[in-house]
Length: 105
Image 1 (cartoon, rainbow, N blue to C red):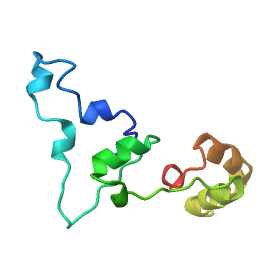
Image 2 (image 1 turned 90 degrees about the horizontal axis):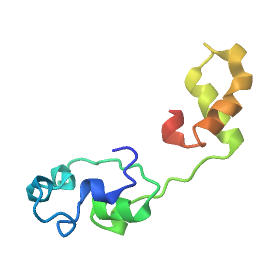
Image 3 (image 1 turned 30 degrees about the horizontal axis):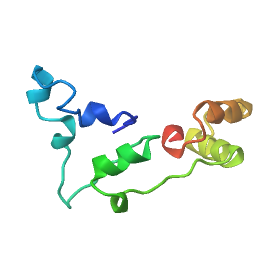
Image 4 (image 1 turned 45 degrees about the vertical axis):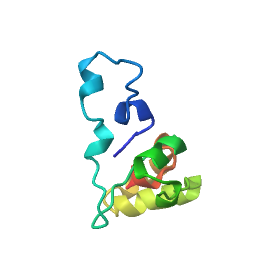
């Protein structure tokens, strides 16, 4: 699940709209699997949203951003030799992707 920053999208407050159809519907988060057989990757800048969607802070892992050099190396590795002549563009592209490993891969 990408860009899960707004917890209200997944767990709306019933008190905010008590008479609307949306308040009578199941929250989107209730459709997330709760079994031990698989994993759901939640990408978010909001740590509270991560923890609430995962069910606990112990079920979350913080993924650090890479530095510029690491990000450019990963990007070039993913591009193989196909775009070797475009290597100078790796730095700006990695920056545009905010040095996030998931975005780069």
